[in-house]
Amino acid sequence: MVKGFDHVGGHSTCVRYLLRHNAAVDLPDIKAQTPLLIAIQKKYTDCASALIKAGANPNGDPGNRSTPLYIAAQIGYVEGVKLLLAAGADTEVEHRLLGCAPGLPLHISAIYHHFHCYSTLLLNGAEPDLRHICPSVSLSHVLVKHRCPTRFGVLFIEFGGRLWQRDVRGLLATDLPQDAPCKILFQQFLGPSF
Image 1 (cartoon, rainbow, N blue to C red):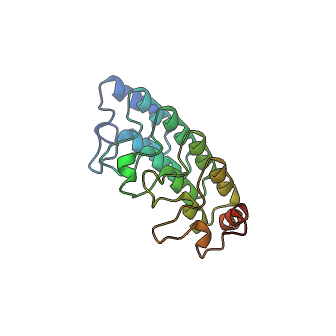
Image 2 (cartoon, rainbow, N blue to C red):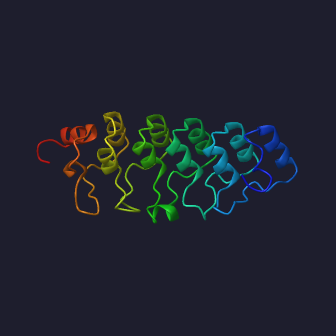
Image 3 (spheres, one colour):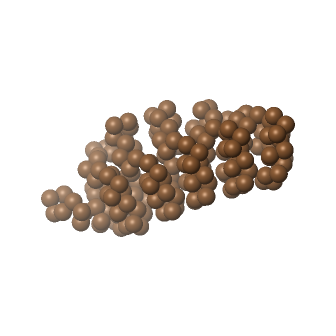
């Protein structure tokens, strides 16, 4: 962590002490990692909660392409995902999305098969279909390419994801060469015309 937070080792009592003595809650380190991002990365729930209560930005520093929510989804840290969403973290940070790297919390939770994070994100407003912002970001393709279990595909459909969205090569998710559970589900859902 940064400037006073780097040696607390997850001890929320120390974090609260530093916060009471005016430690900068959002001061990033050289890699633009805020204390909140580090607390989430290390799964220090009490520290993350104390930082949020002290006013930490739940979206992290704009200079870092990863957000605390992205990190929580990547490592399967459901408690962190819930904490950040309750604090108002954005599920799609548009200026980071337009760079299309490293990705979105919803996509990374699917890639690593963290179903509880994936479903929590959808239940809290994550968009399964972002064609209006960045047409090349297709969750249906991610689900097939990374061989996600069918329950990911079912939620994708239930929350309004479009199966007929094409990737940058012009392929539908059902056109991908992978034999994956979601591909079979999508083919069944679309019917014989596709």
